[in-house]
Image (cartoon, rainbow, N blue to C red; front, side):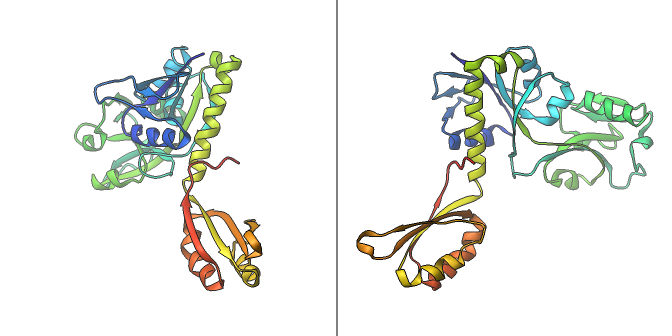
Length: 289
């Protein structure tokens, strides 16, 4: 059994490869190749633009892929969404598909763009958006660099933004948000009904989510004397249940807990003062709930 995996080429590529590595798969690719090598004989990976992945899934050319909700909506693709994977190229925040104009533009909403030119990669999504507002605008496909097209080449743009920094750098103002999008693991319907392929895809979803869960967490372990146990455990977050194990020869206890990385920053000094010794903070690869 082999599944064909579509991986997003471009801005999301590095973050996707790192996520798969944490989940247990090493992916290597030559800079000139579109066929990465995966250390799993059951997976054959292909790099492709995320815009194309929903269409190739719908047509049954690939079994499973990672792409944004924005491109699934733009293609109106008939695919099976396996799970949401909240990560992106810079942060873990979702991206927004927005309508933007120049800062000093009088345009306040989509109605003000009737008969005007709008540049975007999201042609079908934009067409549905304007039609929903009863507006006929000239929607023009753009190959990218949309921010520099306003106002000389277009009156407005529909683009994706993660932080808004590029829009601000080009003196653009967001008028409206069309869609909030996150990355999705998506399968074609035929592959999803195949028991072997479905099991492989479900395992992939479980491990990828486990890797994401672990990103903001750390493990913390320490030794605690008998007389200090109550004081140390009292410092731990009330909703977390530590593992407490007796040390050899009844010389105290080993205490272990999983907490957020930010919690550890303030907690370690407090635990030290409460009597904990041998404090060790360690990273986690996967946390499966």
